[in-house]
Length: 543
Image 1 (tube, rainbow, N blue to C red):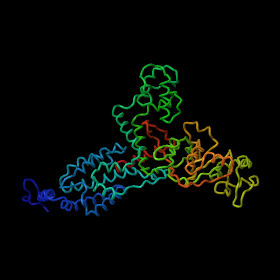
Image 2 (cartoon, rainbow, N blue to C red):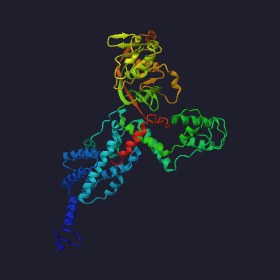
Image 3 (tube, rainbow, N blue to C red):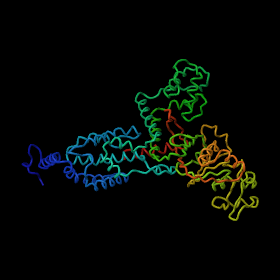
Image 4 (cartoon, rainbow, N blue to C red):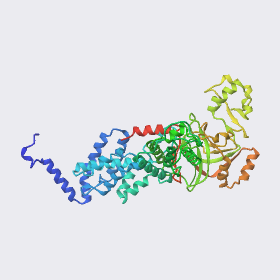
């Protein structure tokens, strides 16, 4: 229909007049009545957003949001008296500051939403309501359980964070008197996460001021040498927090060597004090790259959430260290050996149920076929030499009586079991937390490898440097003395000790962490999991 020229007054159409009147009516109404008038517009805007959603994850989030609004008859959360409320402004501020938790404000349209805080018309207000709610739910869920589902990132990460529902988030936002306090509660409230968060802020300030200084390349610098690069190295160590002395002189003296050793230790390389190509590369890593590593590890911390029992075992595969923790204090810590890069130890959580003294080693079928079968074809006596029994379904058999050339992958009806003893691959102690990966902690006769900086030597299990000390702490809580443990081990008899109270075991992969003294530590991404996670996060940017 062609509009009548007389239906416009001073350039405003009848539709525009009705919109102005409606808006004035909204401002004049009490909050409850205003919500009733906004309801149909919010419902319509949600329907439009669901239809326009470009990803299934966004569509599901919008449907969950719509279900919440339906329960409240589409009453607005961010609109009151015909305009955005203070709570709306607080939410936009929180989105703008999401970088403080290693997230990205642009992913939540924070700048666009800031502009929309000036919304006035009913349709504009409904658009702000839906847009801000969607961003608030996304941000809250990301803060609470991570940006990504860990199992979708990497099949070797077997943890299942409990994602908070959109309905719970919005119900709490509606009733909270302190939005900022509520949003902070969603993030992991652990000291580990908070220290990373503080360090992220520090590194961002360093980045804003131009980053760290560079150390020029050159021949390997060894203790006692004199070199023109020494002032640059000294300055870089001051920036790293490992050196506090004056920045003068060209001698690579003891004080600076010790500072470099601390830097090397914190960077995950051998602390030998020599500044060769590897150490030089670590010194010249940009602060932006370190920031990215911190962001990745904050995501991992959000996957872990706050579910750490007061008494637990914590294994960091990237650091190759295990800790026994009680009420936030480390009772015992020691270095470990973990899975080789092609036998990567998975990330998972389980419960330690028993400890085995003088254990059997039931050789995994993959090792039996891939490693022992070729040896048996050449020399059937290899099993007896290693105190390994050959077992069939009917019992023990003599390895020399078997035609080993007749067997291979998919056709190996035997099992191998190494008897207790000093040469047992599991040593004298095995700590069992039964899981789908057949991963556990144990002793090992290969003690010399614990001196290495990187200890990726196992088939996936976690080898302890001092398992008897770990057993002393754990079994001590069960009424065992160290003398009793030693006595049982000396007997050579296999003994299983069932724990009266199961101990949660958290196997994690953290390539950046901050100690209680404020020192920041980085570890090499030997398993390539940083690279995988970084690529996965980039794929979901803006969704």
